Amino acid sequence: MRSRKTTRSLVVSVSISILTLATVAGCALLEQFLVPPSPPTARIDSVRMTDLSFEYVELTADITLSNPNSFSLELARLSYAIDVNEARPVSGRARQAITLAPDGDAQTSVSVQLRYADIVQMVSGLSEASETPYRLELEPGFDVPVLGAVDIPLVWEGTIPVLRMPRVRFSGAALESVSILGAQLSIGFEIDNPNSVRLIPEDISFAFSLSGISIADGQIDNPAPVAAGSSEQRNILVDLRFLEAGEAVRRILTDRGNIPYTFAGELAFGIDLPFVPLTRLPFELSGSTSLR
Image (cartoon, rainbow, N blue to C red):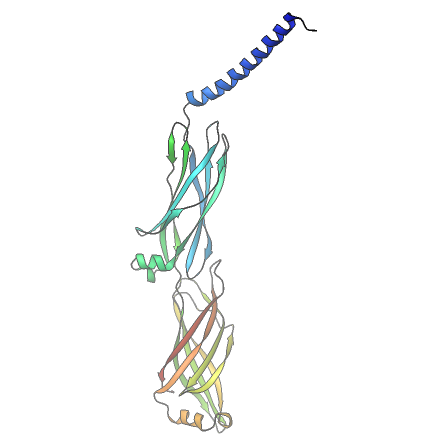
């Protein structure tokens, strides 16, 4: 059985321990309020192009957030906007759940898509440009004890390519040669490449008719690339056999002026830029032509 003196000593010892812990905790809590909190900081490390097509370009910004305080912080909000020639086609807020440890850093990324149809509509003269400057604005925000709302404006400037779809144009038909068996016809067309990089045709499927008579259909594999900002001629040689086409072909060869034509098909192509997938461009052209 413990004596009263021993029990009293034990109570005193426990009380001192509790008081010590309370004092330490109180000092830490007191320090948090006595030492003014510091605002967090942020920086944009890089902005990279992560997707590209003839419809949009996607930009991804890599950000570092820093917390100089002895307590953790939560990212409360993150807004973004892109300006192109003083127009603002894109703005919004990203959903990010990020906790900054005491005296710690955190990295995050924000991806924003910029659609060409939007910027061409808002910015005059852009439909003919091969690239355009942009200004990306990001603003991460924190709710900091004592300081309240702290929003950090960040800016990054750069350029993005502006892609425009190529065009296929019919450029006429010509007789290359005529024999007793038939004739050889050259079907000409042009590929217009309005972009600042090479266009690389993968194949062209087509169907061609004159005066409502189907003359040729098929596929051209691996035609030559089309240089940046140029329009280049391509030709399809077709053999017309009198035995196969009969009187219809003779009529076409006899009447060389203002012959109705249709030229329809699909151009599959790529371009010399990363991320852009193989693109398919359907075309359907009609009018009248003269055999040369």
